[in-house]
Image 1 (cartoon, one colour):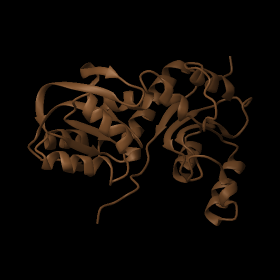
Image 2 (image 1 turned 90 degrees about the vertical axis):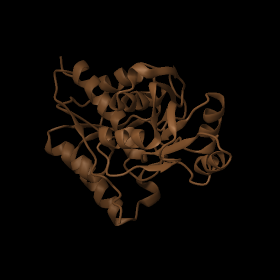
Image 3 (image 1 turned 90 degrees about the horizontal axis):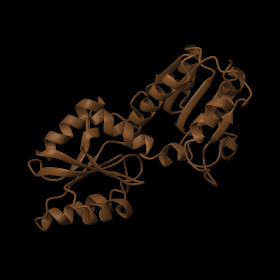
Length: 265
């Protein structure tokens, strides 16, 4: 039986209750189109779209949208030549682009955090799963820098950013991917779950990092590790690709890895 775009969407969204006012949805293409191949990526960059097309995929599942804004499409940039060129590529190719953001985060465990947890090799150390974080308790203490270097190696990153004493010992860790590194999320996590370290993607630099600075000044054992937004969430989309590969084995499924966006000079 042929797989249609709407079959894949219904499978993905059927795992959780309907979400109102979601950013998720089919942003390009038609839901009745037969799927010849599925590509999964973190960001629907032009490079990722072109690679998906080159691989023969006509359905691209992306976590973040195509047009540089959490909400809304290209209308707000409709006269911009970069946006116009990207829109032309999407339209002419006929590729279907489905954004899978809110629903994937609504899975329990959160699909993005689960992918990161698995990649770090910490699945067996999860003590509690929250809607916005997983609480990890390692079997033994490790220094902040040991954990930072291990995360950097397992995720294949060129750098991470750390606040905390290099030799400070950590055992209880909060894992909170993406844009969940702000004070509203991290400060209660540190306090209520007695965490030594929080690992996140990104957040306001003057919130949680400054909290950790004050904690260190007071002699408290706290540390904060920022991976980068894409770097913390891409493992969750790779994890999604593995699920789709099993569920829709009739069509090829691939993961399109993003080229690192930032370089350090």
